[in-house]
Length: 302
Image 1 (cartoon, rainbow, N blue to C red):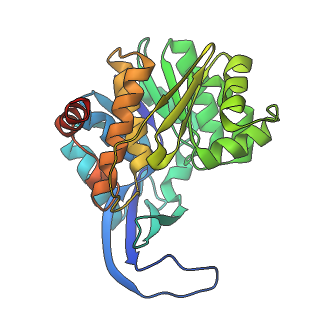
Image 2 (cartoon, rainbow, N blue to C red; image 1 turned 90 degrees about the vertical axis):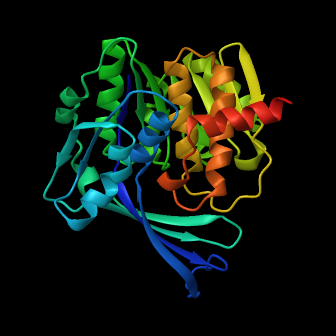
């Protein structure tokens, strides 16, 4: 079982010719809504990868709640541990530029109500893979990391969004996933030895005994674990929208680990899935199915 403890949002997405500079107003050319939230995105990705998934989180009692959960329900994710709160459902305000890059502001709403006392609903057990992000209170993330370790579960912490105070506990996770900007910021916060990014990744892995995975967008993925370092390429694509690509990667990575794949093989599948997620607009609607990832990898191997 994969258990995702994290955020559930509704994404409000505007497309623009180019992203605005600070203080600038630009005209939009499209608007849509889609289920989102890093936790929910990752839960759906793991489910579309073929895994059994339980979501632990919170929504409001508003009009956004049903739409925020729609694709999770359709994907067969267990929502019995999702609480309904008086706070509004979380939202993400997203601008997508003509080159596929994006700017995002998140208003947490009910996600701020996911507290350590809710962890009993997770039903953590030995052999589970537990997936976290930083869009819920950090005290809950740290408490859940401790609870998962006590239960004998494997933990994957996606360090997004960057929060300085999270540096105090990221080494509790078995696998730490960050994009290149986040890793560089955490490397400074952790006072890792000076050097290039791979050297600092190796330093983190040797110091903590954990693996650290850094996503590089179109340049693929780097991963360091004690005594090992690997690089996995992304698929060669022309991106339409990069929203949700990192979450797709994390969900597929958790699914691969849960199925018993070696880390390098799990990374290879996750990188392919993350690439495919860039070919459609939106976060959850763009997450590929397992069969699509299989086909992409088979074609790449020819």
